[in-house]
Length: 120
Image (cartoon, rainbow, N blue to C red; front, side, top):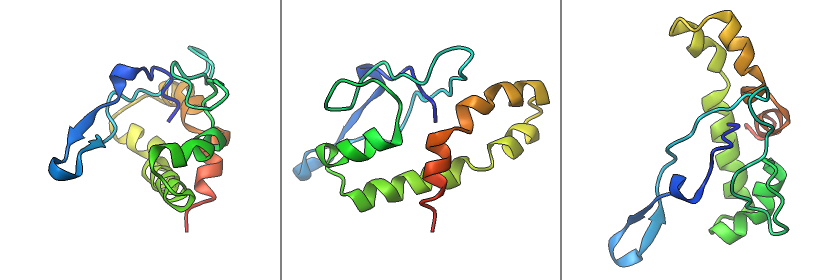
């Protein structure tokens, strides 16, 4: 999604009763094109402190977030499907072709292509 404004206040937990706490659904996600900021996250998730926004890093650390490799890949594929038609949706909401082109770098990149390959 190219959200680089990820900080600890952008993540939430919901109390699930006897089972404890769980991560909330995604919120506060804003795509950021490369002309504004490189694809570098504010909060590094990699074990080596690398702040790069990378699907490879996300998959490597998935077990630390309670995800199996298969679940992490399934989630990435779901996001790829959900965001694949972003240009069509943007056009439907009268976003200009100039604005759509500007956001291309935030929506079409190595990570989005890699995730689309996971779609069954």
